[in-house]
Length: 126
Image (cartoon, rainbow, N blue to C red):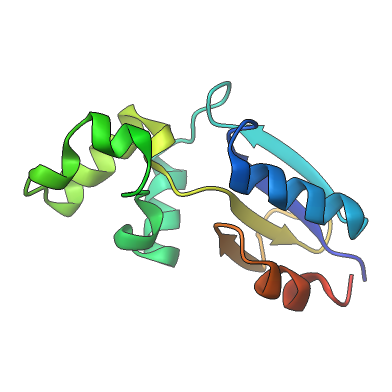
């Protein structure tokens, strides 16, 4: 069965653009959710944190992280999650939720960031 995906990110992000190009070339159906137009809910952020861990979820190399000076602050997990909710561009991108069909309620797999090797392994049977 061909997998489908929901991709969360920002369209002008280089990693998101690579992911979208990969999925298009692999003929994977997807929905794109732009953080700038549709910020993730607190529930989404918490779920992704549980799946990936805060250190993977929080994009500490990004411009927003540096502008806010978060590296100089000793933030608790709760504080980091609040910052992410207020500034969705702090999320490492893209986040990909993989479904059997786009109508399926629960994703069966998750990916974060762009890693062509992982993408090929994940979508090879699509």
